[in-house]
Every structure is written in C-alpha cells, then in structure tokens.
Length: 323
Image 1: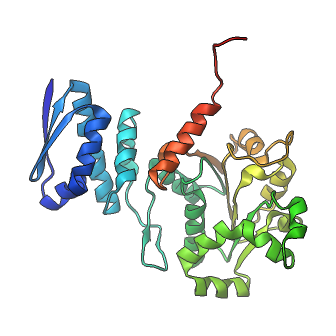
Image 2: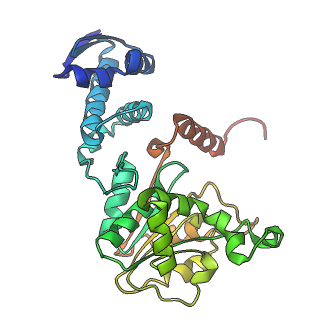
C-alpha cells in the first residue's frame, strides 16, 4: 500500500486539477481503484503501489496540459489517464502550447493531443502529409487552420479544398440547383472550418477573389496547383486512380494535406480505396509523411471516443467458437 502526496503550488491550479465538485478526483479514483484526498493545494493518493504511481503520473500529465492549453476539461483528464495506462505520458513534453493562429472569435488554436502535435509538425516539414484516423480527431480543422496561417504569412497565394462527392452519383440529379449547389452539401465541413478560422465575411471576400477555392475532386483533373495549400478531405472515398490524379497536381511552392478514415469507406463493394493504396505505396518517399490518429486523439465529446473504440473492437477478427 502506497501513500503519495502531491503539492500543486496554488489554490487556482489545485481547483482546476480537482475539477468542479472534485469530479476529476472521483473519475481517477474509479479509473485506478485508489483513494484520493484533496486538501487545499495538495492531494494524497492512497492505494496499490502501481495504481497510486499511475495516478501521480496522471496528475502530472494533467498539470502539463493545463500549462500548455490554459485549461483542462473532461476529455483532457481521460486523455491523460489513457496516456499513463499506455506508458505514453512522457511524450507530453513535446506539447509546447504554441498557438497556430487565433480564430475570428478570438480563440487560439493549439494541438491538444500528441497525435495532433505530430500532425502539425508533419505539415510544417513536408510537401505532402497524410492524416489517417477516426472522426473527431481534428484532422480537417487543423489542416484548414494551417492553410489559413500559410495564406496569412504569404507562404502560399491561395487555398484549395476538395473532397470526393461519392454519395452524389445518381443522387445528384435529384438535388435542386446547378452543379455547385448540388455538391455544396458534401463540402460543408470545409466551409464550416473556414468560417470559424477566418470569419464568414473574410471567407466570402477571399472566395470571390479566387484566393480560396472549395470544389469537388473532379474539378482538379488537368490542373497544376502552384503556390497553393491544397487539402483533400474524406480521402478514403477516392479510388486509386483519383488519388493518383490528385497527388500529381502538386506544383511548385505548394503543400498538400490528405485526410481520411479508412474505417468509413463508402465506395461501392469491390472498389479499392485510394487512401489505403497511397499509404502503402508512398510510405517511404522523402517529403511525404503519414500521421495516424487513434481514438485517444478524439477531441470531441468523450462518447465519440468510446463509440470509435467500440466499433474498432467489434471489427477485430474473432477467434474461437464453432466452425
């Protein structure tokens, strides 16, 4: 049986780490099967040696995240606990808290997980970056944020965002309006990210000037994209031919980010995903980096992470039973 005491220095820091009505303490007690007693600016952890040490590491990780982001929430506490359980908390030293940019609402955008931090570093250091992982990990939002930053710093002259409208096919004819009106619903997540980072008015002006282009993947054929930050979203729904077509559009002074979730492929049965092929074929090429996210990187409501985890577990090959 171990008894570990931690001192947090200030009442404000302790209050945040303990959580509203000690909710973080309650969660950690249940998660690690220990007893935790908070007193002023300190906390005492009582329990099995290994579990008590794990809680100590979790509190230290939470404190690091607080220093980096200025706040922590329920997702952050769960994330820190998962890192400790998987012996990955040492990587938190790489989270510097550097702000990518401030949104139109005055909100600073920073990487919130180790996966997000690797993703931002990969985009900074490569011509083409693949972000592969489940929904809610911030792939699209961070890519758009990095694109807006590059535009503001005059590193590129335009932003091009695209995604395949695989659900369109025969259904497009039943939607009202011209072709742009028909494909706009499939591009809405990209619009939303741009609205948040730039503001609707600025976005509209840049769109009218042609500095920002949001278009379906088919519009990319035959073009050479120079001095642009190009984002392909929902890339799991490209065919190998479409993926090759897109990647070979890369021009001088440009960056590409390709995002997708290979567990959500909507292609017709029998068709291979261009994203799956590309991550295999291009993995050893200098200037291209693959970043893989997991359910631990999900930054949406905690149930999203649990849903992703449950589906991943169900998809694993099952052994045993009757043949």
